[in-house]
Length: 205
Image 1 (cartoon, rainbow, N blue to C red):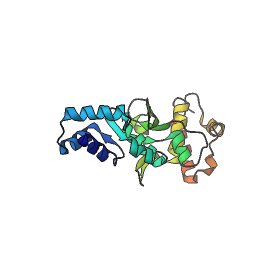
Image 2 (image 1 turned 90 degrees about the vertical axis):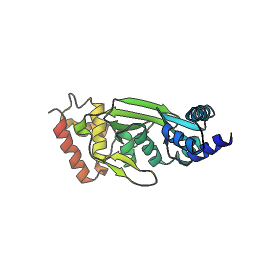
Image 3 (image 1 turned 120 degrees about the vertical axis):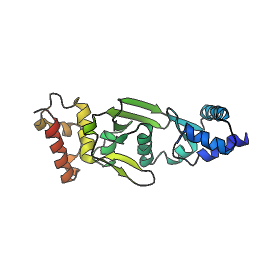
Image 4 (image 1 turned 180 degrees about the vertical axis):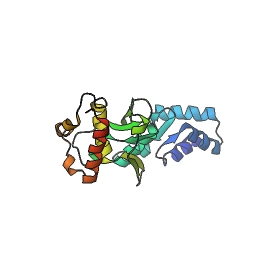
């Protein structure tokens, strides 16, 4: 039992960890992989760790201490499905351009569209083609995360909402943005120009 407790204590300092990390820590404690598997099952059963994705976890202790930090939620969004970046409503709210309540953190990924419902939150991933997987950057802080620029976050939102701008003319975009109650006038002028340039390039005239 002491080794189980020691293992859990080491996991509590990690923002997330893989099963391989637990195996490595277990070896340092002289534990076999089979024993570690048993411990992982018990940690889950007693809600001492939280499942994020296949082979990815976070300790309940670490999550509870950081769950109100939006940068941690965005960090987890990046980790659960890679490569990906936070976009759409979640990013627009982060930039104070939207007031819509966000119940799920939406990210854009090169992988298939998929939703993850976890005890650490709901994470939604929308698949985009490679030539549109761009205009995002790494925000550094207590937790680092990749996030779309304001213009790309708005572009992504409309891209998926209109099914890749089917039957949408570029002159109708402004009305669509207003309908969604997004304050585009609060967006930096350079970002606004980037947004309309992307719209003209990819929407159907």
